[in-house]
Amino acid sequence: MNQSIILEQRRKARAEKNLVDAALVELHVKACDALSNSSAGDGVRERALQQVARWESAHLCDMHYVDAWRNILNLPLTSIKPAMLRNDAEGVALRQNSPFGFLIERSA
Image (cartoon, rainbow, N blue to C red; front, side, top):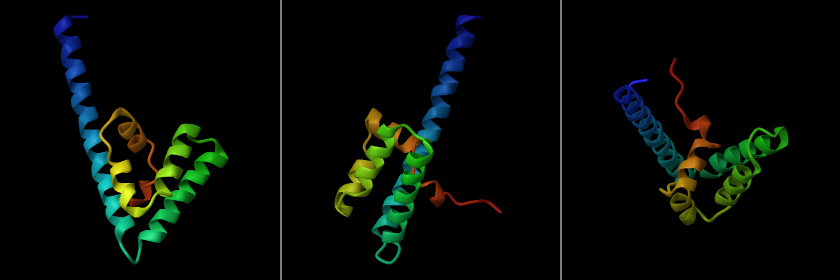
């Protein structure tokens, strides 16, 4: 395969991954806002913890992510946002395995 085609495919793949990562950050900012909501925050936290429990009981997710999300969700509210939005490789991986899918708005 032509080197320029390979490079273009890699560039496109990186651009697509960057878009996905940005959308996941946006979802987790929304999750942080929901968790901070005085009337709904406890319910959001509980629903996310229930999702993590489902992952664990049905073996749907690697235990690393189960443990990491359970730990994050049990942090004090002031510590959750920095843990969820960290910009290192682990933060990116955690957002790709998120218990907050229920916050994604469904289109009609």
